[in-house]
Length: 333
Image 1 (cartoon, rainbow, N blue to C red):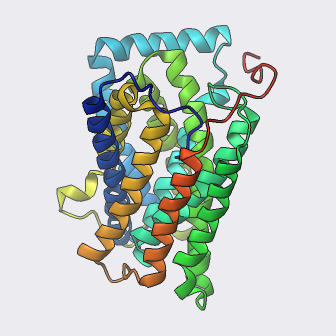
Image 2 (image 1 turned 180 degrees about the vertical axis):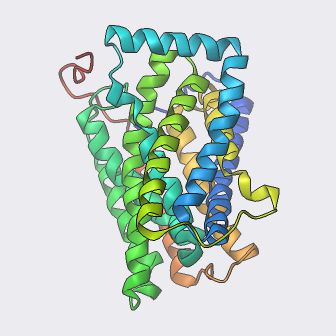
């Protein structure tokens, strides 16, 4: 995700900043691995929504054990209840997990056809574009942020990167249409992270905020799955025996934990840049080193991934955006 805050202060020890960037990049690679896992699980179950339910459900079960078992998690849940009761946190701000559910569902629905690289480039394009609107609207905890030329150019370039990445598939309208699904999922990620940021502030606990995210996402996916079963019947596949196909949810938890741990060393801007870089590079490497029947990245896909990195660099390395005049939107009700 492209963020709006300035890089970490130069007074932070250089070694810690380097270590933080390395961990953030590794977490981005983990997101690409999660996409491959959920995509394969969707193929095995013959149902992308069912795969998303399994992924979110496993993550939720882990959090339901972990959060109450930690003092910080218990304090965070109590703080969330108090914030909702006094109106400082609105119920709609707790719905970010619904966007995460859409993202995970698109992993299972499209990666079997698109491959991880094209999927990731489309998601990043959606993220960068929607982040401009989210910043300008002041949905996140930092309030309204002005749109800078660098971020605008970066958003346009990422859309061009998607067109380039799927350029060799333009003759297949069905495949091109599938690429729109992760693009739309990416549009929701900026809003998800903005409202989840408000939940983290209210709870004072990343674990408690993560639990809310997974709970909302699981409920949304279960509702979608129920409708799908009523209309189309039960999935035609079966649960695979390989344990690694059930690690998508726990990987999502680890990604959030890494971000919370290293942001004090890297700053939010550098964290976002490193994460996206790891995600794009990891996706391309997966398609090259561990190819599937669908993952056959050609020259245009590789160029699209490279252009995505250039766009992120342009958007992230420009001057930090200024706050717009006036207070952030009133969310207290």
